[in-house]
Length: 186
Image 1 (spheres, rainbow, N blue to C red):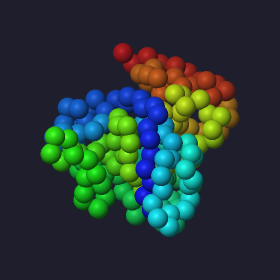
Image 2: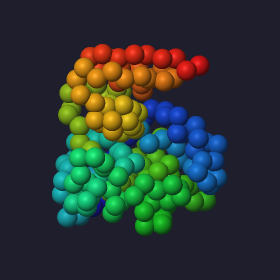
Image 3: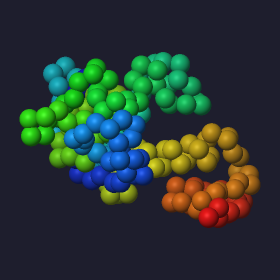
Image 4: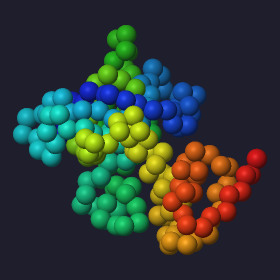
């Protein structure tokens, strides 16, 4: 169920800065990035679900679409494909070598590359009309910000909410709320 994806765009998340400083474990060399947009360039034998030319977002949060968490409306933290923090793929391997040395992944997708080979469960197809440079943040920045600020507290229209820190994720969610209070904590 593997696809070769040519990366077109990638963005920088604060977590990438943490990885560069050895979070959660200091394994190097490491190919960074977990936000990006690419195009499916080739497909493994017998694999279905996407076609060559499909635009996709590689995501560090895979979905089997069958486990209890994937079927829940409360979380998408898959039980079959957990987030990988050890710099390796879920099977314990690395798909990259730099200068003859094993290179480690950022989560399971490493978007700061030209090409990647990735499992279908780590890919989300996007509409070709989506502005690609803007779509890079959908796999992390938007999903974590939206999830934390809108879905997790189960806000309803006309809810009041405080956004602490005034960072880009919080400010991105604030306009979607009909009534809100902004508080700068710094």
